[in-house]
Length: 120
Image (cartoon, rainbow, N blue to C red; front, side, top):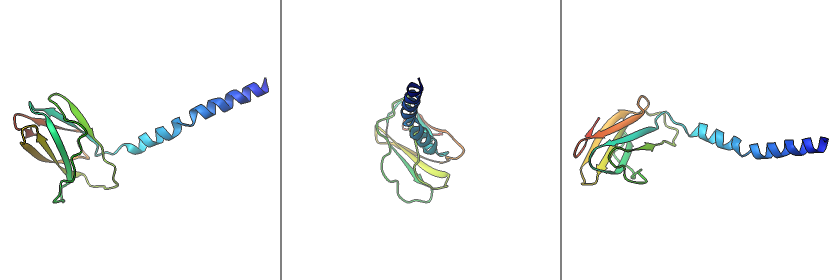
């Protein structure tokens, strides 16, 4: 009886251990600057760049796939900066683009509208 209790306790503990690191990683992954990009444009967003407002460079395209009309994609941050104001550049399937500046610490989504795009 006692050995069965010990065995079941050890088994339950062993199965629960992998859950603990996953929970702590998810908690650490959240950044207040993470946001959704909504495409309310008839054109696909094929490239997306996010850059510090003080930077002269856009860096690399952060999209894994195009954002088609009526859908969104999540942008996540993984740096230790406390900066909140960023420029966001969306490039559309016809080569046109929009650039907008926003405080990512106070918003959770950016929407692109219209043919050729209007950032709002």
